[in-house]
Amino acid sequence: MGKSSSFLVLGMLIGALGSTIVFSGFIRKASSPTVGHSESRQTVLKLGHCLPPNHPVHKSMEYMAKRLGELSNGSVKLEIYPSGQLGTETQAIEMLQNGELAMTKTSTAPMEAFIPEMAVFSLPYIFRDEAHLWKVLNGAIGGELLLKGTSRGLRGLCYYDAGSRNFYTRSKPIVTPDDLKGLKIRVMKSPTSIAMVKALGGSPTPISWSELYSALQQGTVDGAENNPPSFYTNKHYEVCKYFTLDGHTRIPDLLLISEKVWKGLSPRIREWVARAAADSADYERKLWAEQTKEDLRLCKKKGVRIYKVDTSLFAAKVQPMLDGYKGTKVGDLLERIRNVK
Image (cartoon, rainbow, N blue to C red; front, side, top):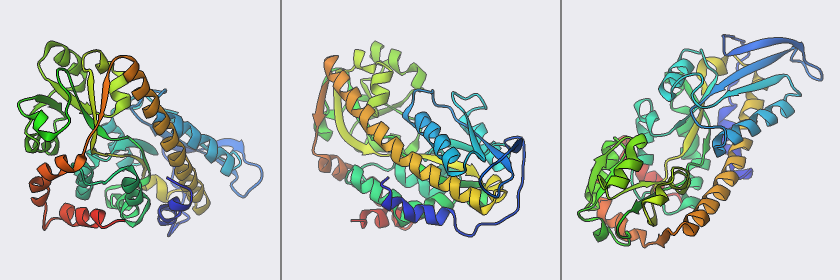
């Protein structure tokens, strides 16, 4: 997210600021005085998420904490608890709704239960490329979606890059949709993912992520789909030697803040939080791009063949599936996304 392009979303986040202060176990005033501005005590916000400390998103949250400290001259502190220390992703979202936790990170996919329009990110081949994705997220559509969960107690602060999902296989490369015919492809337990693989001619096979390596190794499935860092980190390159950069879905991560907590912050603190979040999003995109490039290089070194394909062939196959959304909120949003130039 470039600095100039983040101002629209930032402006939407810090608009209509209130002045009432509310505190709970996850947002509190520390006893140490603050020097240099009108905030008399330190405000501590707690952020819990399920990613490991070496993940680009966690590193970006640490950057956000640093920026928040700089912007507030130390009067606001962000405490980060990775690796599910404060609960699962679902539990963290519930704690935000109750005002028991200040912030968490989630994929946009689970947010479909709260914001039906978020389902658009799970649809295949709706973004022409990465640049198109970020024009959407940094523009009016992205800003609107960040705020759509406020009635459910969830306010989006920024988007984090989670890359694109791509097919990888054991016995042969996927170069055209016809190559998927007859192949058992592991998918998430998602109706959209299942429908996509069926539309492309494959046989979708939902399997838990923790069981996927052994399923690939034993031939229970012929392939799977995910982003390059996940493919490399989980050593799926040991079994699958063909990786296709088709980028069928681009599902971003979302940094959420409790609406109850947000309303309890002063206007000045809200502005600092929004600015620090936007800066962390810029930082995370750089980290993600670097890691993706490096992991693809390492995969090649491990003997994996990387294929770039004509995605229009794949997009044509799933068009009937997308046509099924016409007349719905998701379908209307899809049309708006396609019109972003």
